[in-house]
Image (cartoon, rainbow, N blue to C red):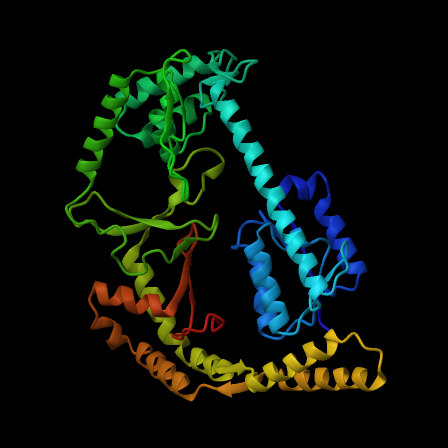
Length: 468
């Protein structure tokens, strides 16, 4: 019998500090679960990965019984619990609840589960209401969650200038924040600012982080809530003006914005070609695993070369790979390797071009319905027990996947690889055609600090498992 357990907690804190998750898993395994699926997410969400996997397994007739500790582990919504129950009943899956042993197939069991489902959602709604009241009180007191650089929180959790001393410079963090604002106004770009403050003060800022920090209303002396729009939350910003000492003024922020816009206009073209080149997004740095970005030489020939994107980042994100490898060299070596390895790709394709599929699904569904009826009897009659065992054996036999050879797909892919093995084919393509063609065959291209280029190929099929 294929028995699955399902465990869930809402937060990582519950899983780690209170050990609630391990307790559930231990109880489920002791109750007979051969495998336990685990989610760390709110029970009101229907996007739980392992929850949906459990429902999928039930629909595929790969589960005989599901064990949970309480009904609210399955969900905190009446609709979600009913959805799961309908799938279990329809596909003959027995549900066992350790803390409330009821038979979901009986009228009394159905009524009990409905009551427990309503209670689970009631508790969830009460908790949401308490959190909402707590957050409203938090905002009324002008408290702050995470202070931006240059600020700290006082005993009332409100923002105040950070007067702690920075060890390397001997200045306070509030003074350093002012220096960073001045550098942003005076230096050429945000990247130059990030590099300078890391070299001079060992303060790490990414370009995007610095841009967001400069625009933070807290630096102007305001305490703002809901400043960033979040998916599913349509809440207007709540602004409390002049609640603490300001670091910048509105004029300063506007001046920085104008400078950033001017830089953007200077660097941008009417039509961006940032990712419009062969192997775009497929070239990786061996040392850090990061992408490599395209740049152009300052010579009038404007030669394209690739460099690790993390080389320009300061601090712990920095990569030592300073090698600049010509893009055309990477493309030519990738094509040469593809032409050379084409016979190996065809051999691999021939050995892997079968798929598995479960047939007799209609017959399996009918037998599963009969099995659910017999199990619902809860009978000790030997004939009924024997009938249940016989139907289970028949379902297992019919559920054995059958290997099917995809002849059309194999011939089509084989023809593509044969064409790709000819150098004249690649020479006939322009850059836009080359980009599309290479994306079909190439999984990634690794480049190391010595310029060694190592492509990894995929087969031109939609099956994701076809990667040599």
